[in-house]
Image 1 (tube, rainbow over the protein chains, first blue to last red):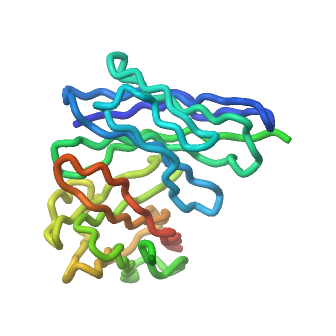
Image 2 (image 1 turned 180 degrees about the vertical axis):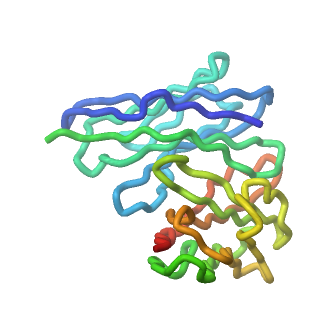
Image 3 (image 1 turned 90 degrees about the horizontal axis):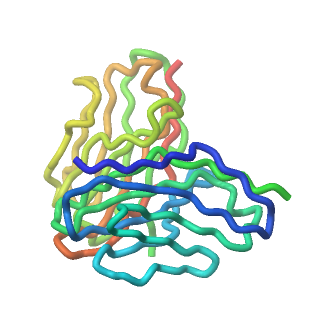
Length: 115
Length: 116
C-alpha cells in the first residue's frame, strides 16, 4: 500500500507571510493524483488543491500552490499571504490513477496563523 | 448541488447501545467511504463501496462494526454494542472513480460520536 508522510505535526506562520507544508509519499506507480485538504475547527474536510502526476506544471489555486517533485516523491503546499482563516489542519492525500479510488491520507499538519 | 449529507451531526449514547450513522452521497457518485477520525489515530479508512458493493472492509475495527449500502443514495454504519473507545468523529465521503478519473473525495460534515 502507498504511504503518505507529513513530517510536521504543527506549523505556525505570521499573518500575511508565506508558509510551506511538507508531504512525501511512497509509491511504485507512475501515474497518480495528489491532493491537499484543509480541515478547519468546524471539522469540514475541504479540498484545497489537486495535482496530476503526469503534469510537470505545479498546480495553483489563488494563494495556494504546490511544489511537486515527482522524482523525490514530494508534494509540498505553499500558502502565500497567510490569513487568519487559513488556520486549520492540512492533510495530504494520494490516489492511484489505476482505479480503485482509495485515498491514502497523511497524518496532518496543524497550522496556526499568528495575528 | 447538495453535498454529502450525514446524520446525526452529534450523537451521545451510553455504552452498550446500538448506534447507527447515516450517509447520503452526492448523486451520481459511484464510490462511498466511511472514515473514523481521532486524535490518537488520525483519519482511518473503515470501509468503502463501489456501486453499492463493499470493496474493502479491512479497516473495520471489529465485528461490532458493520456497514451497508442498500442503494446508491444511502449508506449506514452501525456499531453494536458501542464502547467508549468508539468515541470519534465519523466521516462519510463520496467520489467518482475509475481509471484516469481525477476526482477528489467529497466529505460530509461528520458525526461526532460520544459513548459514555
